[in-house]
Image (cartoon, rainbow, N blue to C red; front, side, top):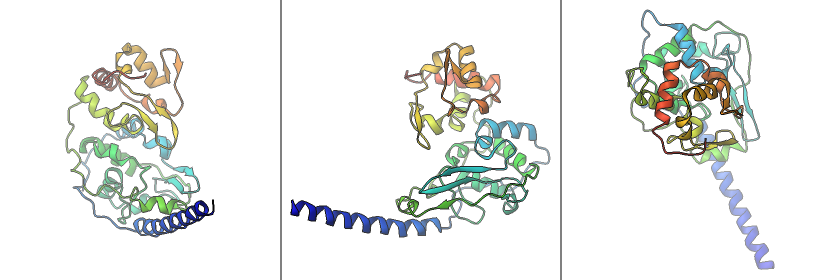
Length: 284
């Protein structure tokens, strides 16, 4: 018995030392400055459809985290992290003043790197936006840059003591090696499975996984189901699920952002439905 207690004591000391070491490493990672691994949007066209930019910001989740007026909110307040979706406007407490132009917005949105070179926490789903074409991202950035000023002074995102060892494992690094984001509308908007695959990469994969076969929801929410079955639903039923959160008479969990998907066009929903029909069957 004494031998077991001694072994457990040594193991506890080693585990504590390991966590301390990871904490120091995490502090260093949090202070790291990164170079952008790909090209950036340096300018905007003279004329941009701001209404379409607002719609795209809705369907891809900007408003879901930063609010309909982009004034931000405290997103997670837990022992490891205080995660704040910042005020993106130029109002009091807003961060827009730190973004000197389209390149800085692109760096944050598609590469998870702040204008000062520090990394954003992975709660910012830049992997999704990295798949977005320049044409569509330009509209979102133009919309963000033109957003009315809203006063909302929020605290900064913080890595707390319990979060530093987590950071030490490298999970907070922006992706160091990734190909340039696509430059054009690939494929062009049309009610096809190819275009649906493109749309799923901007929306569905965040919760349902890159293969859309489901899994744990980010942030500890309910398990996200596989989506192959949804592609076999009647199209009207699929539209109702996406826009109203009711699937074949069953109310979906509110973690499903159907309020954002209300802004998706009929063409986009048809393309997405056709793409989901190509997937392996899974739980609806």
